Length: 87
Image 1 (cartoon, one colour):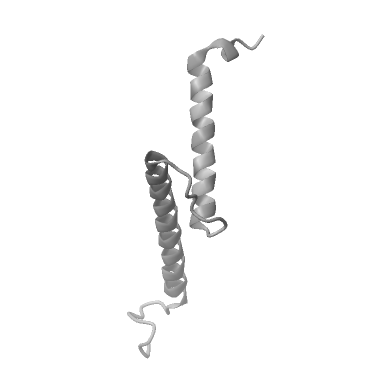
Image 2 (cartoon, one colour; image 1 turned 60 degrees about the vertical axis):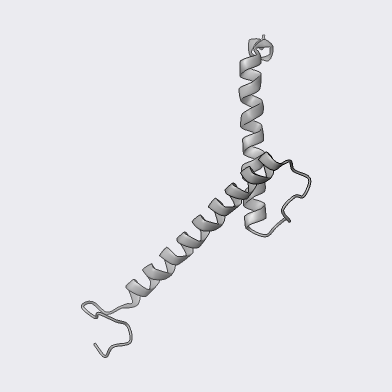
């Protein structure tokens, strides 16, 4: 039998994990511009979602900049201090 169904702590953990997973998916969709930021959230939910969206956007920006820097470094001739110089 499913003994975990009668255990309130396990049920609460599963509920929290599910809510957290939903918020994470929603934050990704909002950060990526797939959906608008929901207006029907209470203050705590709005602040939590806004923080998750900021984190996602910051991470995405950092990864983009790192890729661009890596591309620039890869294109530089060995020993050339700057791309625009005449090495």
